[in-house]
Image (cartoon, rainbow, N blue to C red; front, side):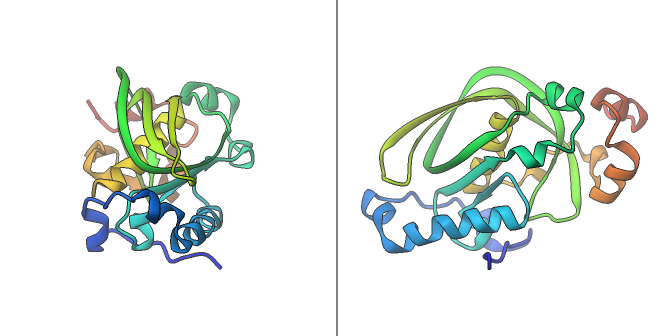
Amino acid sequence: MGLTILQAGETVLRQVAKPLSHKDIRSTFIQTLIPQMRETMYEAPGVGLAAPQIGEGIQLLVLEDREELLQTLPAAQLAERERRPTPFQIIINPKLIIENTQQVEFFEGCLSTKGFIGLVPRYRQVKVHCLNEWAEPTVIEASGWHARILQHEIDHLNGILYLDHVRPRSLMTVDNYIKLWRDKSVACICQTLHIE
């Protein structure tokens, strides 16, 4: 059974998370929490989960964009979003570096704002310096959807929700997105909804 995912309005989701020491990372608590977070992310289902979302104000996140999540999306949409399967990653104390200032907009949702989705601009290419589950330094270079997931989850560690970046006129329920807009291009949606 997974952990409870907190919803917007909880204080911990708006606080800057605390870094973990090497001793913290190797602790039984963190080593037990990591697989619990992975299971919770799978059950949701989601592609990322940050510790504040389960009530822990620490700089820890997990992510994975599994093949089965991509199988229902059209090939053109996967190509446009630069979305490819991403293996499971554990990221601790991340430092985000923007590798390319080009931004792209796509719809994002969040496990902590269930039922809503909106257009969010994100940097196309990033690098993340962090520690892994053994407290070893790691560098992750990412582009496309992987870069988007990293930015979204690292925002959680800084008390930021995707709602802080969303294009307000694009915010809608997930049900309406699926029913009305799922197969439309971002350009078409922006034109129809008068999003400039």
